Length: 243
Image 1 (cartoon, rainbow, N blue to C red):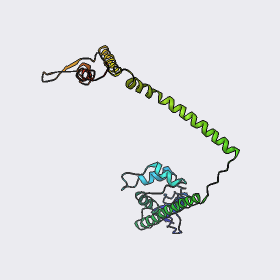
Image 2 (tube, helix red, strand yellow):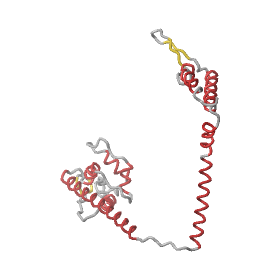
Image 3 (cartoon, helix red, strand yellow):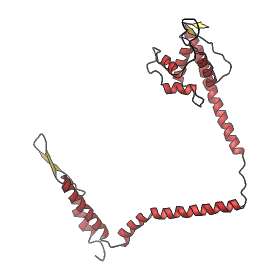
Image 4 (tube, one colour):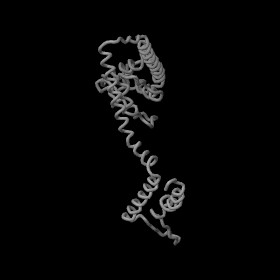
């Protein structure tokens, strides 16, 4: 049957889900223009179908090729509401009545696909829960497994000890050693940063604004490394015992 110069197939209404319905209609080339010899041009391909949907005048966004490719594949992906409308336009051959019939058929087929996939997952979960757990017996294999687990646990403890060695050394340096370790480390850090900023030329940078005001910034003007360091470090030292 032909309609508007295209191959038209009426909705089968046979209870097929979307994947089954789409596979038959795409293979038959439903909605494709009839050739000059009066025969159907052949099946749809993802490229041809996505191009045909995108060429519909009222479809401003078109359709992504990857989305159409998912329709051709065996997977859990169905079709969205917007794309149901555009696919119904293709299979309805531009006829308003046929398009409405196909839109209804595609919506019902998509609902069947969703319901069948949900039932399949529910059945798989029921089978998994129905399988009883195998009882464990004290065999030679179990003893070997326990030995391997013990060795694995020892290796994990050893690696954990190695990972925490740096934290323990840092804690011992600042908590168990001399109270001067922390301020000495801070002083060494600020001294190194000061020399580095001087070498890089960022210790004191100034620029003039359009209104004539000169602004200065850089390492020497950073309050967290200069004023705070000079104010709080002397306050920290007298509070330390046995200095």
